[in-house]
Every structure is written in C-alpha cells, then in structure tokens.
Length: 317
Image (cartoon, rainbow, N blue to C red; front, side, top):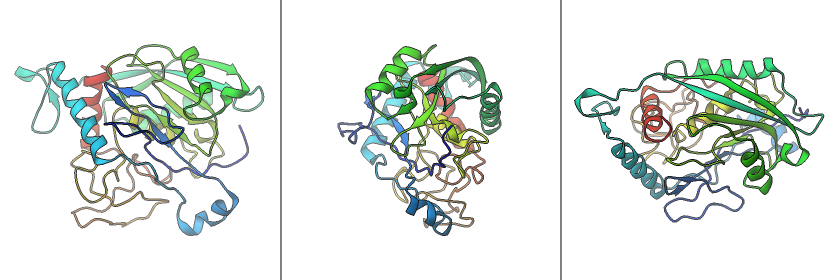
C-alpha cells in the first residue's frame, strides 16, 4: 500500500430524474434511476497541514437534489409493491396477513484485491479484520457478512483506478461474481483523492454493482483518520440504500429516515454537541452515514436498519 495518508470526503454523484451526472461520474441504473455514490477526498499538503485545526477538510459538491431522492423513493415503493409488500406503521415492509418480515441475511462477499505487483497486496488477516469491522457495525441490523471468495489481480491500470473510467468497467466486468444479493468489494489505489464509492441497489443484474475502497482505509491502513475500516461500512450503507444523514439539510424529507435528526451539513472530525438544525435532536455525528472520522462513527439508527431491510427486500433479497 502507498505510504500517503488519504483525507476523505464524501459525496453522492448521480444522474437521476433527468439530471445529468457530474463529469466523470459513473452512471449506474437503479431500476430506471442512474445512481452511484462516490466518496471523494483531497490530500494536498495545505489541506493536510490545516486539517487538525479545521476538524476536517471534506466537501460535498454533488449531493442529491430533492427531485432525485423523490424519484428514488418512488422507485423503492414500486419495487416493494411489485413484490407484494406494504409499509407497516413502523415503516417495515410487510406482506398482507403479517408475512414477509425481514429474516436475517448473510451477505456473501467476494473480495477483489487489485495490486500493481508491489503495492496493494492484502493478507487474509487484513480482509478478515475488515469483515470483523463490518459484522460489528451491522450487528443490530440483521445483516452479516461472510467471505465467499478472494482473488488477487496484478494490473497497474486497474490498481491506479479512476471512478467511471474504462479501467473500472473492464475490471468489474472481468471480476464480478454472484448475483445482486452478493457484495463485490474491490480494493485499489484510487485516483483523484477518492476514498471509495458504491452503487445503489437496483432490480436487475448489473456487472458494475459493488463497492470500491481505497486499500489504505482498511483497519490498520495508513489513511488515518480513516483507517479503522468504516469507509467500507459507510459505502455498504449506500449499497443497501441509505443516503447521507445530512441529505436535504434542515428542510424537506432529508435522508427519509425518521430517527436521524436533521443536519444542515456534513460533520467533520468528531464535533460533540453539534446542532445545526432547529428541529429536535443533536446532529447524528456518530452515525456511519455522516462524514466524521472512523473513530467517531459507531451507529446506524433503528430507522436506517429498517430502511436497509426494506431495500434488501425490494432489490437484493
């Protein structure tokens, strides 16, 4: 792995509801809605030097619009209805007669290690450590993660990977395994300062589906303060249908989860007591879907867990 520490910032880049994706963004269709959730970062010397004082340097130039989230929500409702689900009072997708309650799901993980021959190599212990982080983070959600296979590919172009590039398309079309219920993780040296990106769920098979992470972000990597494995936790949240906690700011439907307090903007570092919206509740800075440091993140809300379960039932289960 490279010795450079990567500073992360997160942004959803997508083209949905007739809105064009930003230049260079990969367009991945989610049941008629093009969507991809890259997590963006900068790592200039000046930014690195000022990070501690500033409490973070992340930016979010490409958040979803209200129209985009409405389109995605409408598609989720249609997908659930097509499978015979309705929403219970607690938001859980259920079938008439009380059936269809979410059953615990073990997600098969296919890990694709990309190297340039020297950098990027991961050990079985490295991968096991990341899966342990995921299983701890998702322990209350009904999801667990089990390694189904690991492969290592030496390809310098794939290793020095750019989001939305021909190299990414070639890599995924060559390596992806399983169905849309199976999680494919690709670790590489991401270009443009990226920490990782993920695709949202969709109803039909797509070889581009999966999660890409910076190899240095795994537990014990060099991308401090993002080196405890929660880049993957955050990205898989997108893969299971979650938005950022600060989606929509203080108004509107936000992240479409009722128990994550509204948040005007992303939180950086670990700003205890931050409260940016007048609605009840401090900002959810410890939520895995905010932008705080790995050491600060430790929770998914009950509402987020229900949303992931509903998304699984609609698209992946």
